[in-house]
Length: 89
Image 1 (cartoon, helix red, strand yellow):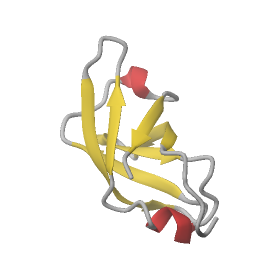
Image 2 (cartoon, helix red, strand yellow; image 1 turned 180 degrees about the horizontal axis):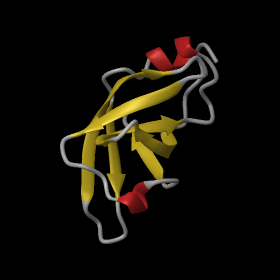
Image 3 (cartoon, helix red, strand yellow; image 1 turned 60 degrees about the horizontal axis):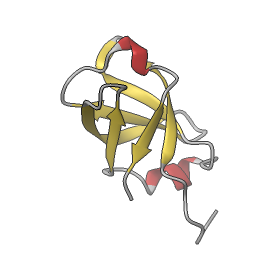
Image 4 (cartoon, one colour; image 1 turned 90 degrees about the vertical axis):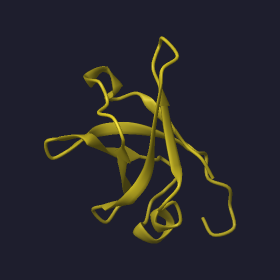
């Protein structure tokens, strides 16, 4: 993984506990906590079918397998679950 480009697309897995402004994002190319730490502070954008953009940032890690915690300014709708999200490099 070191020195390789990461595909900036992840999948919104779930809300973080009961906070609708925090979601957990799984990026298939990231396998370790060390690789996920490189994305801390990066911008994340989710766009719905109508073209509305929800912007957030990678605020932390969740677990040991590289799942990211992303915080948004506005809460995401429930239809965002299991949908792709872009993480800017």
